Image (cartoon, rainbow, N blue to C red):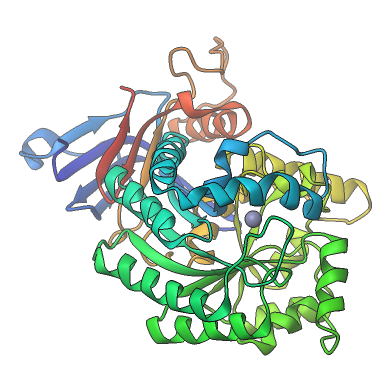
Length: 444
Ligand SMILES: [Zn+2]
């Protein structure tokens, strides 16, 4: 059992904004899960006597403390399918692989087993906050909330809502669905665990009609709940949504007329937004979960993240398993940089996202997208301490240590090591993980 009071001494880095990376050498004091002091001067007094009764964690010269990663969009029930069937386009992939697997989660025991593995895997990968889609099953999805509580992950958990027919027979009657969602929300709130919150989850406008979406908007208002869905991922999907909603001029309008779009809403993908839709999303305060792995694997498209950021759309990153083939936000950062570089090479000038901007999107950007930036996402006095102790040269890790370093000061060295971790690192380099001040992974 870890102590409730820590002092972390060494290098720490956190993105203060898209353009501002703060790297310091000093110490961070954490008490009862919150950051109470940040000292950016390592030549400080005798910490041992100043902080008697605290656990003092001294980082070695190659270790750095960074904020925990935020995964704004992933599907917990799809993890058994990760890396399978990605040679099909979205709607075919859903029908052949995804819906048949998700139907299995009526079996609560099966759900509990899978979700325990999922939550542990994400924490191991440094994801301290995750926004999850569950399945259509309320009881099964409650198992996901229970796993998050057991392993101490900060989460939004959504019971998926669908009421339109599909070949797999994976949908619910509207009245029954709305009643089950309400009970699900009440059950999650009854855990009274501040790390775990319910989120309303209409799958997307292909699977939900107006009655279901507007009913969910009402429940969202009643309980002041967040709401998540997908928008404009794939051209066939957009065509289909407009075909079944002939009075709407755009995909965004389908959600907007049902009061889904507001500042409690986070939408995954948003690859093919028109300028008018982009303005609607910005105006309504909707956030975007950029999921570059699945956008590439399912050949959905190249999301113009730079254009969205320039238009003040709030963007975080998502792994979108199992459309995405990696459960790591480190991978999402690299794919974000790759997709942005591909857009630039296609002629979209200035679209490249740098490694430090990707680091922002993975931490504070994600926290903003989930409206948690008052609590997590960066190191600030008063924020809760969700953090990763990374060691780019961890024993048995993927990064080789050479007797050459271009950097001179300790801060410069930390910047060099952070870049190496972002471009080359994996879970072996994430040696400790903290959520609200408590250690949830320890390889040291
Ligand atoms: Zn998704």
